[in-house]
Amino acid sequence: MQYDHILVRYGELALKGKNRTKFEQTLVRNIRFALQGNPGAKVKRTFGRTIIELNGEPLDEVMEPLRHVFGISSFSPAMQAPNEIEAIKETALQALLRHKGDTKTFKVNARRSYKPFPISSQDVNPMIGSHILKNTEDTSVDVHHPDVEINVEIREQGTYITCGRIEGAGGLPVGTAGSVMLMLSGGIDSPVAGYLSMKRGAELEAVHFHSPPYTNERARKKVEDLTKVLTTFGGPVKLHVVPFTELQKAIHSSIPSNYSMTIMRRMMLRITERIAADRGVLALANGESMGQVASQTLESMYTINEVTNMPILRPLVTMDKQEVVDISEKIGTYSISIRPYEDCCTIFLPSESVTKPKREKAARFENTMDFQSYIDAAVENTEVMTFGGESGETEKDMDSLL
Image (cartoon, rainbow, N blue to C red; front, side, top):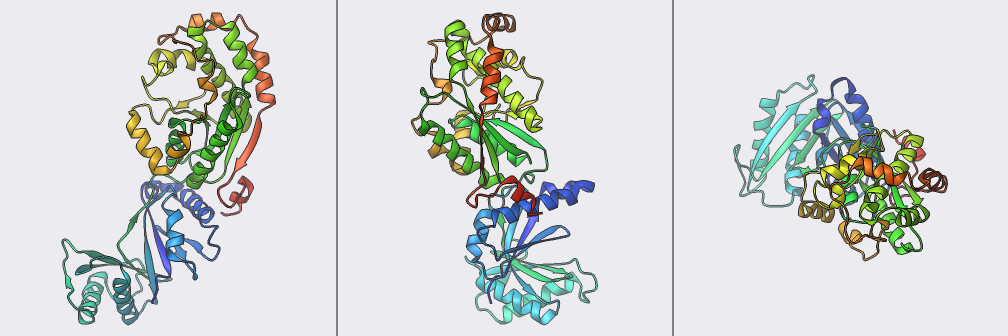
């Protein structure tokens, strides 16, 4: 007997009250997207659980992408039995025998969601435990610290038996909290900010500022590869590649060098806000961490933020660099981010930047250049690419998975 199902459990999602159905439907859509490489696997939603029928698909292949789906607190391989006590007892025994690892002690934890089943949960536990003890050697019951807990869920459509559980990604299903426009550089921080934004349920779009010939195609390819990694956690991502060369050259020639970084960041925010507004996106996100560099002091943030009314999410604001690096390694972006190709923020870099810029000075310096025409040209010539994971799915295809 083989594991033929996977039982998916919710965490924070289960507390959503009247909105719970919408959250669960979105999670099912995201699971289906993640499992497109295993077309035989079928995803079904029941009360409090999502159940995946393997239908012959390899268990390990199906479980691996589930680890990246936000909204899942944990999941377990499961065997399904008909709602008959003898079948349940034998299936529980087989599930334990198939469980990997040290299983000298066990505990049975039955839950009867299907009330017409004639035996109570309290009576099911010893019946299964007795059957296992009679048919195994060197095993015993330990209700306090068992090597494995055998969970038995009696539901209307059948009984599901699991041994142990695998931790999920947690958070909320991507697509339940609106859309966020991520300012995606080629560095370590911004992809992690995108990942953490998706963990709170945000669908992601990204803006990248490209300055050829000062930044080459390998720098752009790095950002495209980072975007592809992010799709494994939240489905398709649109990448908006903004031609930034002319505006950056104008800043370099017109603005005092110590204010050039501040003005450049203000221009980036203006452009990102325009693109976000055109896409119906209500918030921006970036990889800033308080005090990490000159443009990330509170004074700099205050001056740079002046040019937009949109909320700016900073998921990394309280983290130190090592915490960010640890997350980037975990999610698979670190090795891409450290490729030695410069992004636009590193060209024309001044020898020093003001750490406490003033809004009045920034506005006065901007009045010396016709920046609006540069912004209009940059937005008009922005290239848009959609990345949809290994399957190449588009946003329209995602909607069809509901």
